[in-house]
Image 1 (cartoon, rainbow, N blue to C red):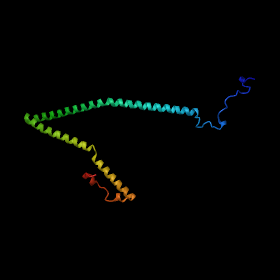
Image 2: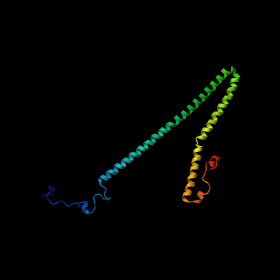
Image 3: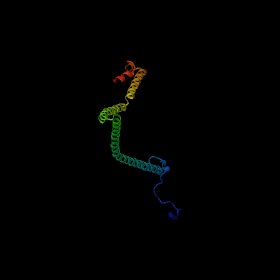
Image 4: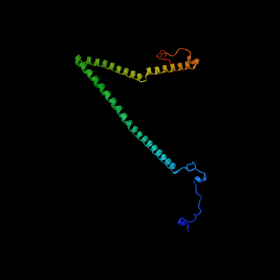
Length: 178
């Protein structure tokens, strides 16, 4: 009987590996093929994720780069429309004054005075709007809430330096001291 027909003694070869040698099949020394396949799939997924994030960042940069000239053109258009609206308003006021007074000189004089009042009013409104955009009342209230919280915390924990003095009041914030 020859070893090729499967009925004779087996050809000598390397000893079999596996659980018989005392090493379990799922040990950390030899990862299983399914673990390697899962790690490969995870690495591929991470690579695709980071490539997608890179492409997203590139697209956002392109949008931002295209948006800057558009913003500039919109700002120029806004100024142009504002100036034309202002000129139309002054022209209508001047026409109404000329029709009402029947005197071009008096109408122009009144128009100059009204124009100065309009400019002062718009300037004051812009200054007030900018000042209110910083939310001064909200900032003062948050400062007062923070001081009250610190005072209460000091009173609860028993620290005398935090409790000393009266609790903060709103009059100090209104006077401008912080």
